[in-house]
Length: 256
Ligand code: PEP
Image 1 (cartoon, rainbow, N blue to C red):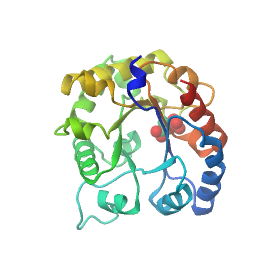
Image 2: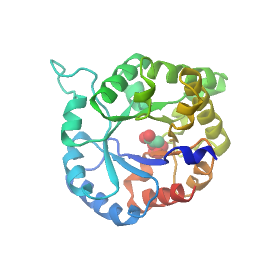
Image 3: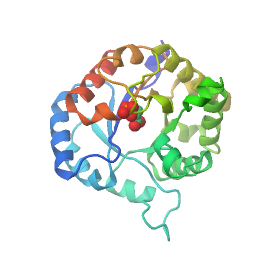
Image 4: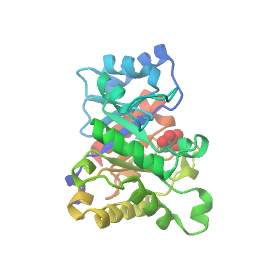
């Protein structure tokens, strides 16, 4: 089974939630619950919680990620954080191109590509988000749109660099809405993403790539989604803010 060729990763995306004390409480609650996971466990936290998260997860199986990164190395970019600033702290992952950044902060496929390149060049592991709006799905262009997003995000990324990239398929209509894509819908698009990666690189690269599903994944629907051949984990928003829920999804990935 090709699933054995790649690592399942469950990554929490905390978004703009949790002050320092709350972050500490959540991480401490999570640590024992996910300690036996045989999948990757990542928490992507606000910049202000990175230091706390790095300290509290030291020596554990929980890896830390940021929620965005700028593509320039340094300079007059007020309010931005560079890839080198993140790696200097020991941060390993970074979410890039989340639909909330695309919707509210002018993120485009071009800037997703610039951020992805800057991240891998600095040694970060990007979790690159792609996914269609409800209107796109209703217009029957999900496949073309997601394939285009993947191709543009990976432009000029080498096969070697690809090994450190995760793609998260997140249908925008399923994020934070409680509406999950059915396991078959999610698996179909994750499969299509894998085919797209194979068409750019080759089958070996595509088979080795971790492709997550994200969009209202929770302890109830996780096992079915994660049991699908092409779904290698999840990017989890709301459910990552509650240790038992996040741990239950990690447990489902451990079994799936
Ligand atoms: C996300 O923010 O990436 C996400 C999938 O959110 P939620 O799980 O809340 O839908």
